[in-house]
Image 1 (cartoon, helix red, strand yellow):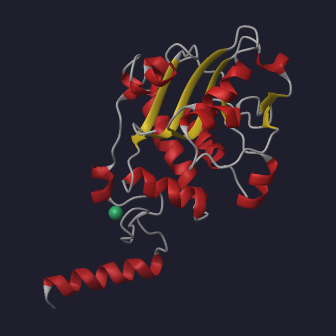
Image 2: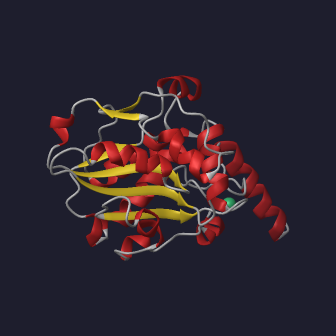
Length: 236
Ligand SMILES: [Zn+2]
């Protein structure tokens, strides 16, 4: 048998046993625990924000929110790898992808001195109507992966989005900020006093959503805030 056909027969055999495909190129995966294939793995546009106290992430909040630390796992560009992954996660029901990305980033954050001493991981909540229609909160899945890997508890109930906000996608910068202002509420602030909280979201663009949520959290005495997202977008 020719070498090439042997290889493709092997690939076909793997496709049969393993239903998992690379979330980027669609190639069959050898290990079920993988989310992307080895060649796409090398192409992941990872940031090194977790190594820098001041970085493009914290710059977006400079003068607006007092952040202990802030970092994103991947650079998010239009049509890029991070956009593909987040699209699968948000709109294609790929829930396992969310926790896998969280676990991966959890390992990265564990190595960073900037993310030591976190007491609690909190995902930015969705409004209950959005949660019902999507069936899950993509940021909660990412947060869950981080929480498991860093061995830090997660709280996804104490902050709620009590006002349904329209999708941010087609809004101007100013509209985005007005859209989320006052949309969040902390149910039991006492529980969060003097806690070091890591607030987690899917993508950082203008920062309007994270800022809206942070403003509520930072009203709580002694609360210290850090942030992490899957993607970081330079464009707004
Ligand atoms: Zn691939």
